Length: 232
Image 1 (cartoon, one colour):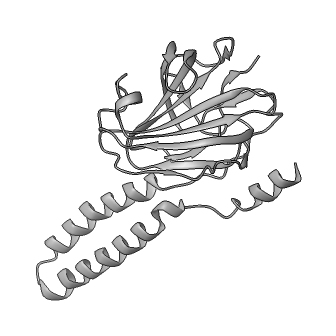
Image 2 (cartoon, rainbow, N blue to C red):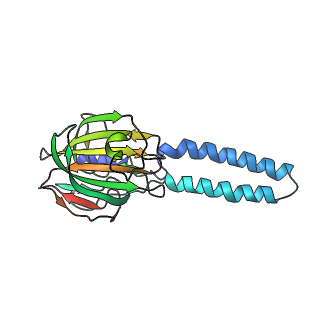
Image 3 (cartoon, helix red, strand yellow):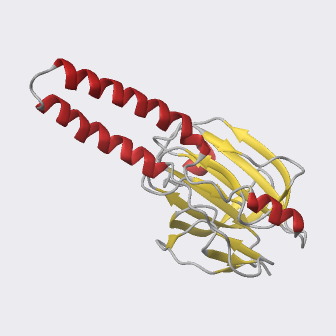
């Protein structure tokens, strides 16, 4: 528990996700530079204000995309599976998982729109068994084939009870970069960041068939807060 508290403290000052700090800073400098040129070189103020409105809105959207809320799960996390991402539930079904488990699993998928927070959290406490990254296509993230054919990162976590849980970060039609912070052999906890996916994307969680589902189709989820399932 002491280790978990120390790790959580490292997140306390996070406001804008580190994946967006450089991009937001550089783009702001460029915007200020172009706006200054328009202001001092063109007598007509319309181009200046048109630029401010249009590109100011775009920059604000990027700022919203890279926001990183400070969240802590309130309560006991034993055998709980929390949402690894903000978004909505798009899949709850039994499926054949033939890459790692070679049996049937319960699949719960969360789709993230460009308006959602795109930080990802660990859905369970445990230890990272392995991390695999697979290049692939960029189908729309809500399509069933996206889970296997799109670029994705697989993180297998073994819970303290010995249950293996697979988390899959999936790139969407617009996403071109998946960032995974999970490292093989490290302990992981709910409240910690698993990674980040840029633009629209999806996160799949593969669970044992006897897991109790706690969410419904199209239900909104809040990463690190919404309980999506309970392990038996």
